[in-house]
Image (tube, rainbow, N blue to C red):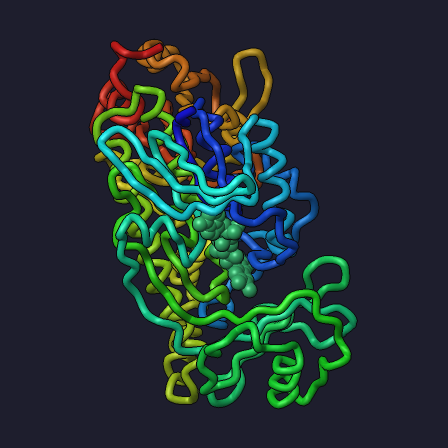
Length: 492
Ligand SMILES: Cc1cc2nc3c(=O)[nH]c(=O)nc-3n(C[C@H](O)[C@H](O)[C@H](O)COP(=O)(O)OP(=O)(O)OC[C@H]3O[C@@H](n4cnc5c(N)ncnc54)[C@H](O)[C@@H]3O)c2cc1C
């Protein structure tokens, strides 16, 4: 049976994409080559904006305890405490916990996650995509209207679709391991050492310490499988004088400083998201976060297309909005790595950047890049400060019956959201019922609420970004609704 959408890969991005698609009403299946989830800690922190994306689907609380994450650029700390807006990300959540939470969620939504199935071929036509899948019963062909490749940095889907992956090769190797039984001094944002070496040590959960070592001049190994924990422990001892040799290694890997972004996030009926679309050194701690935001940007648009109400050009806005984010990420990663690991020639630059980041405006700008709260899409003409930015999910309002709620709670349906302080805007949206929820209420000023001007009326897309405000947007509400939610004539 042909599906609406096939998602390849049950990593965090594939699972988030599948959940978003299902929430939008699409019939979706996930193919994953691994027979069982991994226990890898990899992306153990995520940004403020990704926490908000989880919050606006009711998923943040499911992750259990997290800690605020420190912010830095290339090892130069940014003091988030002085900023008006909360930019703190979350840390201490091993990636397998995030994946388990998402797999439970998509299971509740009824999405099949079919494991032990590797996608090996992709063929697209004008009206669909056929994939070749190697599974427990041998090779098979499956078809769908659309395909989303969330199959990681070495993406088979990207290669089969013929999409280029420009950027820089890895020049440096970083040994990383999760270790128990060691009590080495913690260096949560890493410590730069003379000559361009670096060591990092941070707590994960249950007595596990994540350690990372880069020894200046060490390129990525040709054969990563030949590396052992003693290679890492030897390098650690050479650089710090401390021994980790007695530790028990739970997981070990070696990553590089390669930074790339796919040339196209969409080719016809094939889309890329997450590491399949962009890779950067994990030291940036951004890959999972930016990938989850790709998923939240793409899911509702693709669901609108299979639901038959997507306005013209909606699917192309995925590349238009997310490709610049992936390119900026790759550029920032290269800058941060050079800043951090170029030897003493970089010392004056580090000093200057440190001085700049001590200024509040510069810190706010850098924090906006690193928290992803600084993202602003070109969604409409106008001068309202929220236009094109994310609607803070902690923004509270009081409903006519006196109930208090938050924007984050109102977005849980996965539909668009029109909040209005009077009934006039609500009438304009009555032909978009089923795609846009309309709520009349008054903004509540609460201590600690994100600052910013609350408009009389605001139209928020399902991904949480503001598409229209009153006052402050040139187009009227009817035009904004048609642009993002399709023709009123074809409304449900
Ligand atoms: C040491 C380390 C630390 C990191 N720390 C952070 C951090 O703190 N914060 C952060 O945001 N990011 C971090 N990252 C990056 C983060 O782990 C990745 O960005 C994230 O895993 C990307 O998710 P994804 O779903 O796009 O891809 P993946 O997690 O790679 O998932 C891809 C899935 O696709 C499957 N697959 C591949 N090919 C096929 C195929 N042909 N058919 C079927 N299935 C297939 C794979 O088995 C896999 O399950 C870190 C990475 C590393 C290595």
